[in-house]
Length: 166
Image (cartoon, rainbow, N blue to C red; front, side):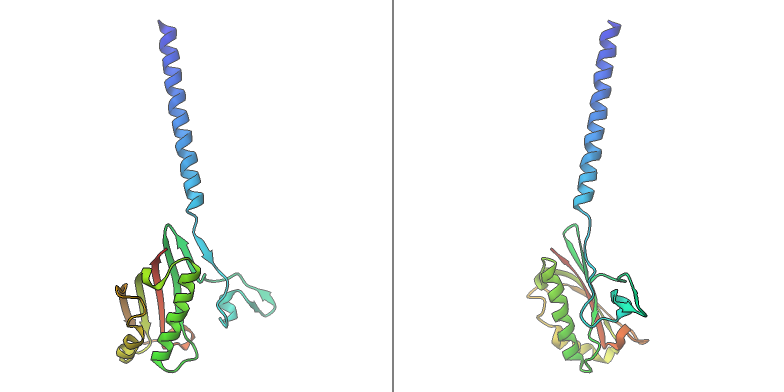
């Protein structure tokens, strides 16, 4: 009778170990599948120090990615327009860049969930809204707008980032 109990306990222990190993393999496989997809290549005309270009003859690692995809979401980096002095045109150009990144990542403007707008000057709010209106379809994403009185990198009038579903 003692041997049969041992045999039962051994088989139960083996089953528990097998189940645990299968769960670990499944979790490991899931973590591999869910690794973020990133596009670190520099945007055209980006500052070489930020984009991974050559500075002083030394190749630099990219500082940021254009977008990252993770678990069904697309995260687009803050985009600015460095050479446009008109807020309406700058807003349109930045939204065009964001749309390009979303499409490349397998999403679209209609799938945008959250947008953050950083304005250099709060007086540009109404004009920015004119260019922004309708760009994300009939159901626009939630949005936060912040005025940055100390400026925006690259001397842009605004910077916009976006989170969208894939």
